[in-house]
Length: 296
Image 1 (cartoon, rainbow, N blue to C red):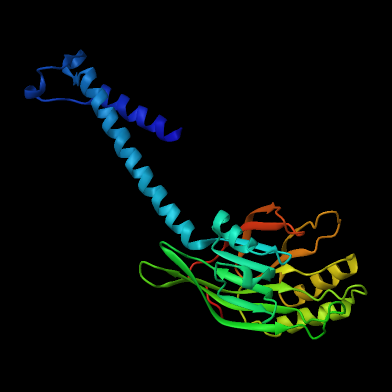
Image 2 (image 1 turned 135 degrees about the vertical axis):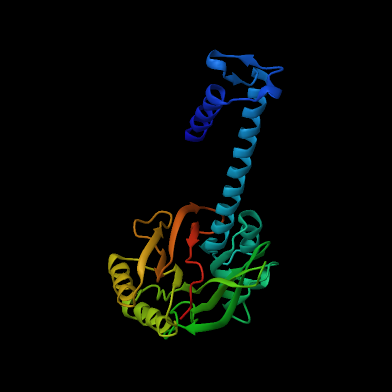
């Protein structure tokens, strides 16, 4: 609106004060004090030209903003997939995320490759991280590692695995690093039916011990079944420099099981919860990164 008002004033100024020389008299109308203005046709043409120039400048500015946004934000999805075959690949095809932190993935049944995974060799169940390669930008996962829970689950007998990786965001045009951070996809100790809180915290501490200095996105299914579970997890994470950025509900329960924690100069926005055939809801959001951020 301001741009339109400014343009109108400039056109009015041109109409009131533009003086032409003698060679321009033909085809113009004379006004008082010997001043001349261009004919209505010329004024309209000039106005259209200025509007076109203004539009081009606006489009150029918008293009710059879009490029900056593309570099400094990533579209991220987090979900416990309940071992549903092919569900992770379906989500990637529909939502086109830059990053996907998956828990209870059935990796052997996924046609799309997850670059980082910590799963059972036999069943293919576990946690994983997907990083997309897109035009103008790509995410590379390095230093991929697995952290085992110090305690096996009661039923069935198994050990939960957490996937960690360093994520480097590259600008494809020049190959420079625009941002970098660490990613953690966790499916935390459950301990059903006793749900031992101490064992859960020991699992989380084992993961924290494997994290390097710098910004971190730490997300997944924390199995916080009670207020005691949730408070213990949050206190442990805060002592390590993390903040609880977002939690989303598990259907039919008041206390959420799934959470996003962040550390360092990163933030999240535009969170949106979605449902599919998994018993857990998933969440998509924007991860906001500092340009030229460092892992350490």
